[in-house]
Image (spheres, rainbow, N blue to C red):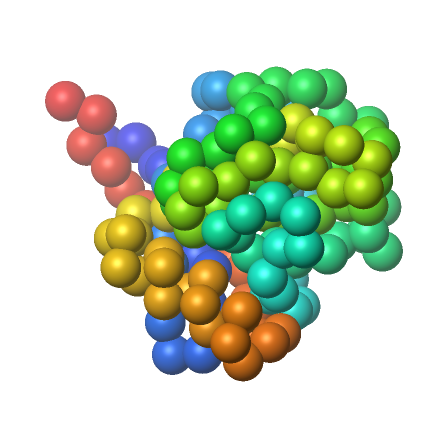
Length: 148
């Protein structure tokens, strides 16, 4: 048995779980763990397609390398963007997404992927599009995982 860190993203009565990619993005995962728990606002993206995001520009992140980074996250992918050319954020891809801003395309560090269905992610994105900003809580939980 080993311990696996999971990100828990709670919006309303729904909690979404994402195992963290500690070996693929170790510095980014460590930085994320250091800023959590976080209570903030989840909003629809302005430029990137079918996604939501949390502005974390007021948080003092360490200087992070590009690791496991992507411009085109897959459905459910969580990106930590440390603000190389734009404001810092956590992006949650809910469908087809090209991560970008007025500064152009951005590459965020892929730190986890939500274990959620296409319908659940579509509903999450549509909630922020239809009803606007939603309260969100992001936490880390440790769980035992059998590596066999």
